[in-house]
Image (tube, rainbow, N blue to C red; front, side, top):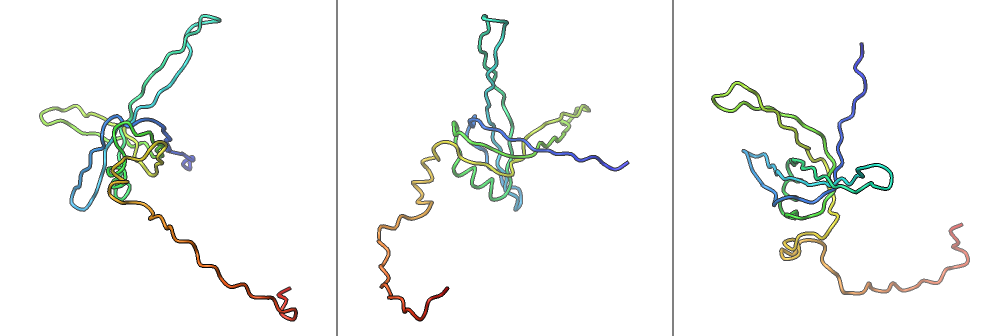
Amino acid sequence: MADSYSFNRAVLVGHVVKDPEFKKRNETKLCKLSLATNEIFLVGKGDNREPRKKVEYHNLIAWGKTAEIIYKYVKKGSLICVEGRLRTTSYTKEGEEKKTYFTQVEIIGFSFLGKISEGAAEEGEGEPEDDTEPEETPKKEADKDECPF
């Protein structure tokens, strides 16, 4: 039987728990960070319903240029939206036989939803502002015989 279609995508909006951690293994760049998301729901019945808040913590990983950008501009408390894939890996601690499984979101794209870190402005990154006005091009009078339509 043919494989059925599947889809592995996660979209999260939340605050970064602590400053991202950057590592370089050989030529591979990676950045690890944690994101907190809030879920508000009602508990109880009828008029006695009370709002409750549940916080979920998500482990994220980014590679290459995305890892560099996140490390440079994202800080603890930053509000970001990430899109990625769920990845589960396993490892065995030395001297133990039991495997430990670890799930994280592998970032494939992200957006800043709040203020970008002050470090960006201090380092002179971004587009330079141009205060000069554009030169005015001389207007050419149209020749009645050169009508384009």
